[in-house]
Image (cartoon, rainbow, N blue to C red; front, side, top):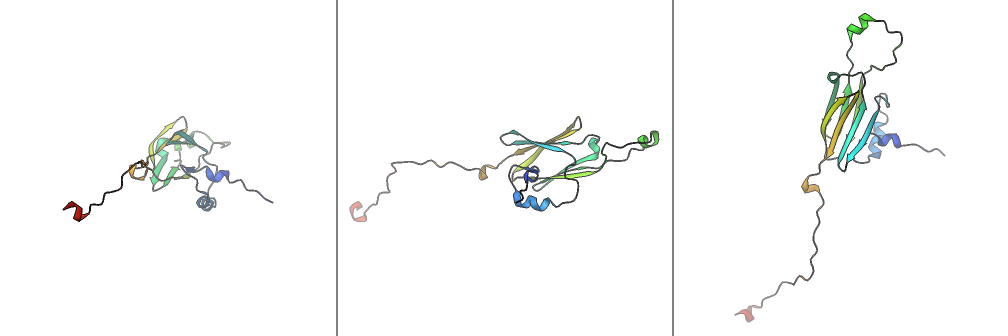
Length: 155
């Protein structure tokens, strides 16, 4: 009997569990482990995605939020100055382009993004509209039934 570890499928969701649709995404091309990232819950309705993008400048990164998908892309531009100065004997630092997509729950919006010390931080907040929030209905007791007025008695 085989058991399958489905934990990696839950890593790219923020705000809710999406099992069956993530199985379709598991067959997508690309390196599933690059770049590494963390998803943190910073408050009741606040999240932070931190992506390790060392070696990428702010201009080489782009963040696009469309519908319920957050896409982070990195495209490394060739640096001619470094190529002319030195011959690279061993290249261990990844300089490849990447695209990482995250599925967001309903009403999750991108608050801001920052790049510091090789980490791209994307802050998310879940803001549910008042019309969609559950509301409490008070229950009263002792409500009298409406009185029926007889026309012959009233005249």
